[in-house]
Length: 99
Image (cartoon, rainbow, N blue to C red; front, side, top):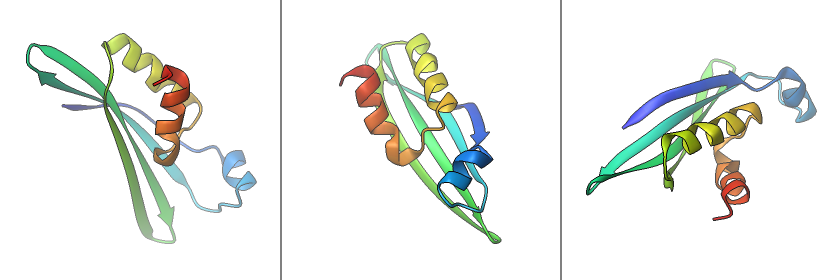
């Protein structure tokens, strides 16, 4: 199951620092699935780039990394606040969760 958590546009300052002149939106999703009697929680990050009338979408899902919803939401909040993109989400999770 996939549920929308939150979304942000990357700040103009960060885009300018990287030399990017088009908007980029990040969306964060809570994911979960039932396995036997236990629910396993994960996340998905979607990056949408708006390039001169074209849209480019990149996505990354990381499954079964959280034991409960509270931990999942805490990590999603950190990812959102730091504007973590799909390409960096696994490294950030490794650092935060030491997995």
